[in-house]
Length: 256
Image (cartoon, rainbow, N blue to C red; front, side, top):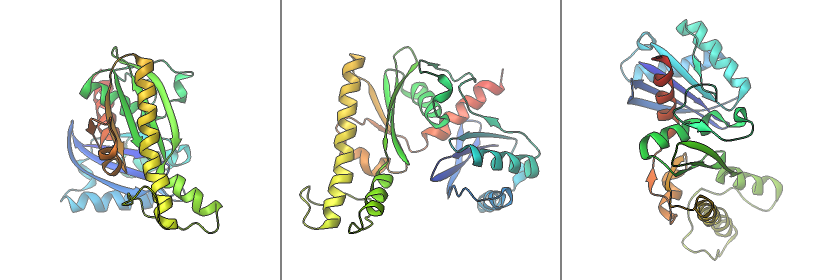
């Protein structure tokens, strides 16, 4: 079995795979103060819920955008699994090439999204990832990662408004019945939720114009199932795209 650990700024996703076949996945708060022992307690618990033990893990692959947490996860792998994980970065054989300056600046999660999307749908394609930040990544027909856009994530935007404006409340991430809000919560939901849809669709339109050809649009990330149905351009919803990209990159490199 392969354990895939996707370390994000807000949440970390833990995936269990038998080769490319997904078995189970779980999410935990990233928590920058966690220790390797805490992380292992989560993983051990999750595995046992599946009727498994840590002994079934043969390989581990990590994608991380939080360097401090990367070190803790690596320590956990060494201490409890007695193995060094494969760390996703631009130097691996990704199945795509990178046209970005510098290539090392592309987040591991964005590389995994791009590799998985191109493998599954070909190019050109655009991946929209609704995470702590909302990212759009563009892959050409020839399999070249061309770059993209980074925007505030929905929860990040909502938190920022609440923190910076004393009279604005916390809100739930759901669409209001009306675009014209009749109360403060409804007005914030309208601005954040419908604003995100409008922003995403507008960016997709401009990216398609630069590509000069229609592109498949794939949505992923924590809020993809909520936002994607409202978009005019999203064709596919793939909540596990990062994990699938990690596994594909791992298998592509470990078999060499």
